[in-house]
Length: 281
Ligand SMILES: [Zn+2]
View 1 (cartoon, rainbow, N blue to C red):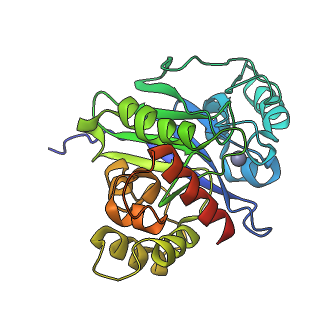
View 2: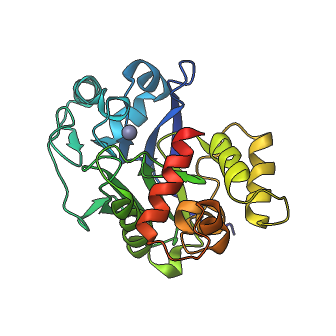
C-alpha cells in the first residue's frame, strides 16, 4: 500500500523579469490546496493569470514582506479581485499600514494558522522598518520554509534603506536564525523576494572567497546558478551560513575582505562595509 505523502506547496510566480526587477510572488498552499497565502503579488496582471480558479478560491490572505511598491503595489487590486472570485473576505497581512489595504499588522513572533501549517512572523527591520519574514512549518511532515522578502537573499541581503549594519546583523543573525531555531536550519528552505543569486555569487567571488576551493559551498552554488535561472527554494538556512558573507561576519576571510586586518571591527561595522562594497560592485 502506498503511504500517503503530505506536502505543503510553494508556487513561485515570476514578476517584472522582463523589466529587470526579477521579483517573485509566492502562492503558499496547504497539502490539500484548500487554503493559501499569496505573498507579494505586486503585479496583478502577471500573477492572477498564473493562478487557477481553485487556487484563487483558496487564498485566505494577501501577505507582504515589506511596503516597497514592487512587493505591495498589487494589494488593492488583487484582494478586490480575489474577494470577487471567492465571494468572501481576503485578509491583507503586512508589516505596517504603509502597505496598501493592510488589514493585519503582526507583532514579532506572532503565529498564524493556515490549515495545518503554522506561520511565525519574524520582524526584521533594516531594509525597511516594516520588513517581516514568514517562517512556515508543517507539524505533520516536518517540512519548513521561510519567505525572506528583501532581507535575506541567497548569498546576499537587502540594502539598508531604513536601517543600519547593526540592524541587519540582528535581522539575519539573531532574528532569522533564532526564529527558525538551530535544529531546523538544515531543513528550512529559503524563498527570497528577488532572483539575485547569480549577481550575489559574482560579488562574493570577486570580493570575499576569490579562489575556487576556498569555500566548497560557494563553489557548489556557483555551479548551480550557472545552470539554473531559478534558484529560489533550492537552498536552506544552513547553506546561507556556509557561503553568505553577511551571515559570516566573524569569518577571517570576510574580515580580510573588508580590510579588518586585526579582526577588531564590530560586527555592525563589518556588515556596513560589506554592504557598501556590494552597493559599489
Ligand atoms: Zn524592497
